[in-house]
Amino acid sequence: MSVETHVHQRRPYRGSHIATRLVGPMTIVALVVALAVLWVAARPAGPAGTFIGQLLGAEAVLLLSLGLVLISTLRWVEQYFDGVDKAAVWHRRVAIVGTALIGVHIATASNPNPTNLGPTFGTIGIVGLAALTLWAIAPRWRSITPRPLRTAILRLMQTPAASSVGRWIGGYGLWRGFHRTTGLFLAVGFAHGLMDATTFGSPLLRWSYVAIGGVGLAFYVYRELLARHVTPLHDYVVSSVEPIDASSVEIWLRPLGRRFAFRPGQFAFVNLEAKDGWHRHPFTIASGPAEDEVRITVRAVGDFTSSIGDLVEPGMPAVISSPKGHFDYCRGTERQIWVAGGIGVAPMLSWLRSARPGQLPHRVDFFYTARGPAPLADEVAHIAGHHDELHLHLVDTTTDPRLTVPDLLGASGGQPEEVSAFLCGPEAMVTALQRDLVRAGVKPANVHREYYNLR
Ligand SMILES: Cc1cc2nc3c(=O)[nH]c(=O)nc-3n(C[C@H](O)[C@H](O)[C@H](O)COP(=O)(O)OP(=O)(O)OC[C@H]3O[C@@H](n4cnc5c(N)ncnc54)[C@H](O)[C@@H]3O)c2cc1C
Image (tube, rainbow, N blue to C red; front, side, top):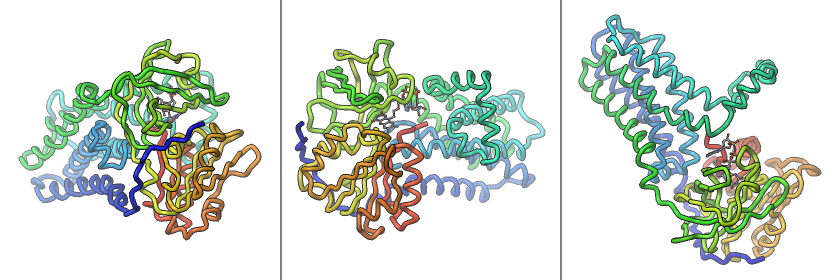
């Protein structure tokens, strides 16, 4: 087993990422406040209720336009929001709030003399946006449903009719295909505003509305029509597909041309041509940047990943798009806690496979937890043996209790305010540990997590 010796210069911790993490969300808040101030300052004569309703409609267009900017896949947007995964989280948040605001807008805004088509456009817009939003958040229904209602909903979902509908709409591919029509529904809702708003006697309000909706729709057109032609793509071929255990495989990809450059811990959209056609999924690059071949470790969770070992064979083509993500231990303090759950070890594998002895922070406690034997645990332990500062804690939850924050901080031994944590694994585990670390005194900006679910 070889240990990568890629020179990956570690930057000293300066805390500059704190600003990076806040700047995106604060910009959203600032734009929402600025629009409200503009509307109040330029308010034309008319009833207050209608004015507020139309202001909420304009705020909804702003939020939904920002949602389209956030999902545009442009590199600078990703950097502004500290990674495409965080941009996806904010995309979801602004879309949910924007759609909810349209509900209030419908109840409060009124135009006694609407145009012929305006109200129809408005109805198409809100029905489409509401349906797409509900569909997007459906897999997380538990987190938004009050506890007493959950059992009843679960029972309903277990009926044969509901479960066959659930299987149909639960598929990621179908959902994503429809989700890409979001911009079309925003466009008709936006047109409804232009046609029927009574406040647009004010040129300032009209043109700011046009600019906001126009920007959102321009980003949508870019994403849907242009992005695929300008995104750098790297041609690879599958060189091997190795089973790691019963539910995960490691896929090796050999470059056909220029090698794909990335930072350890980043992920990329990997297009694989399998026996049943092309599949495009985000995977963390688990190899080190200096290795000739790119490695990804894949866990069976859904339709494609469950049959990847049968569908993908050596010799099949693969295309990797540009690297994304900011999950990088170099952004942490000198005392770090890493937690990987199962296949969430992938970014840590890339870090370890590329770090030279003496290059890691002063002390790293690496908790690697899995139910049963952890994937590639032998290699992780072997590499850990080359780093005095790395303390590996393997946790098998079939026999050991689940990790808690006192376990993490106790092993690390540092003051919570000195510690940085890097978490990657099942969403529930990562969310609970993130919350408890902050409660225990770790600075929120020092808790870094990788989102493995962009929906
Ligand atoms: C940043 C990031 C890094 C990831 N790294 C790894 C990794 O190193 N190893 C690993 O095993 N898994 C990784 N995943 C998860 C992996 O992308 C999904 O498990 C995989 O896409 C599931 O595909 P499926 O067809 O088997 O599942 P499906 O049944 O189609 O979907 C299951 C769930 O996977 C997600 N998903 C499916 N297709 C996509 C897609 N094209 N784009 C985005 N999300 C999708 C959705 O949340 C969906 O609900 C990563 C995900 C993200 C967001």
